Length: 109
Image (tube, rainbow, N blue to C red; front, side, top):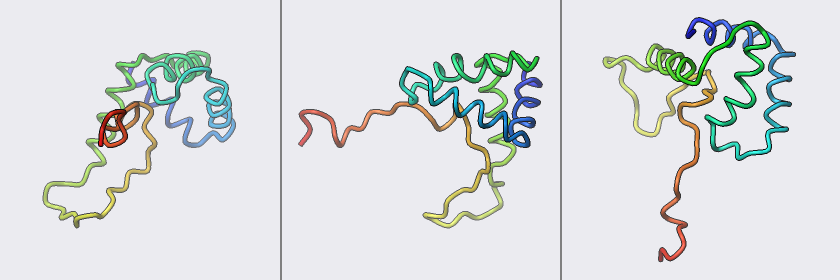
């Protein structure tokens, strides 16, 4: 169903009402937004299914990975240190999620 994820995000990119609906659903989500898999399961996947474009977490991860690799800089393109790598997509699973901040951990000096 990776094709459904692709179709959903094509529609998402051009449909302002759909983006608003997803943002509103995300704003009403009672859990932690850092736990992206739960947000996807409870917010994004039900909306996609209502639109007739059901997909799974695995489908979304595969779609995002494929998209990220396709848009990654080529090996022969030099990247300057500190230069941000531009990717116009805001991924739902990749590069998101809770991370432990060791610098601010309790008991750390």
